[in-house]
Length: 255
Image (cartoon, rainbow, N blue to C red; front, side, top):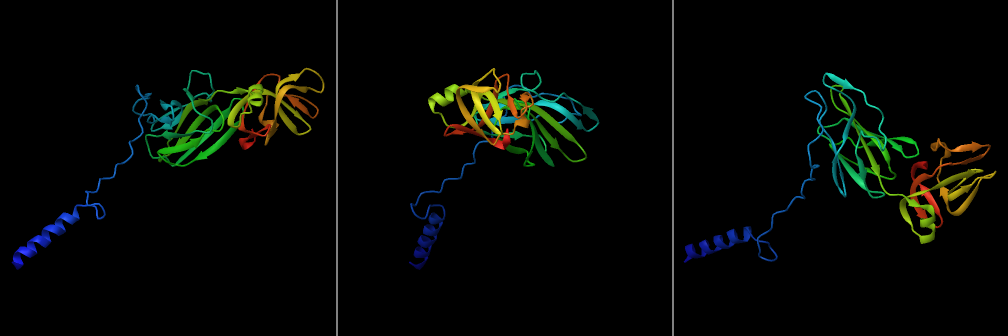
């Protein structure tokens, strides 16, 4: 009888080891999230002595990046700086404020971004040195993803990110708010900036139609502005990206 009781206790202990303590059901194995999908189609190729390809992951899909200036193993090559609308580098549609991920084919020692917005303003950005580093897109434009690896190797990749701009008149009349890109004519007078539906051809120039006050603007970031004394204005539409609220647009990083 004692032997039978001992066997029953052992059987109960074994059964309990494979069950959930609260429900008595077997514990389900944890499931890892799926790995991000690489872009469809063949990757750009440079041959055995070139850096490996890189790609960008966005909410709408993945895209291969174009090669730019690099020195890798025994080969160095120079490319023109990236710009949107050129044949070199993909144009990638993103949402305002979207965080995208760059995927590299090697372990980098440093990663950065030379960002050139549609108004020609250049800004270097330091990113995390990782095979999968992220960047929040706060305004559209062209960019060079700059990376360094060991043994003095460096590789750059070109891209252009874009999202649809909204006319300032539409934004004001609809009462829209949030992060967005707004198109209009910029007027800077006595240190105050406004994004206007149009600028009257008078002196001093004046806003016409609906407008937004511009906060955190650096007029030096707009090299195409016409200037006369302390007044500056755009003779062509400009696109500003920032947060719209209460009749003003607050720009990120001053431009």
